[in-house]
Length: 92
Image (tube, rainbow, N blue to C red; front, side, top):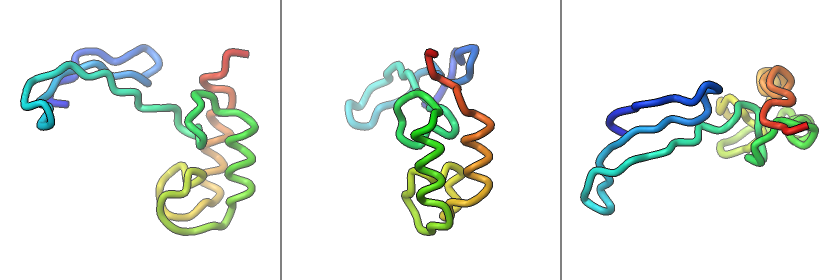
């Protein structure tokens, strides 16, 4: 994305434009940044995300969904992120 023109009030969505090398043209983009702590990407930080961190606690390595802060270890920092964002994105 070359230029961002708007950010949603919640900060999750960014609208902008940029050059798409695949189509070789300028295009509009809607970027969904996701919700911090949403380990399963269902749009809601809930008990499933909390369980994912707890079950994977102490695990190391890249590409672990429960490693919310992406430092290659599922630890207390990831747990705090989920707890601080618990309920975000959930309708009820």
